Length: 64
Image (cartoon, rainbow, N blue to C red; front, side):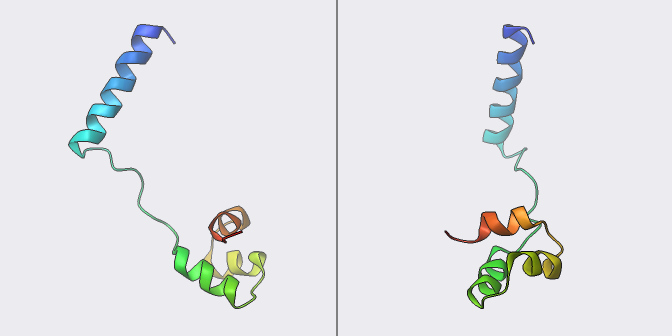
């Protein structure tokens, strides 16, 4: 992409975030539910299956 166009797009995105127009996607998982099941000893693959999310998402939410 041309440097000027890239700078313009970056500025527009930053401006929209500042005005509250772009807020990101809505949360699709409940991190507390993942942590609770993990603390109970449920395996990540079973947590993922129960909550309908990927194993990678489960692993990202489990504290190391």
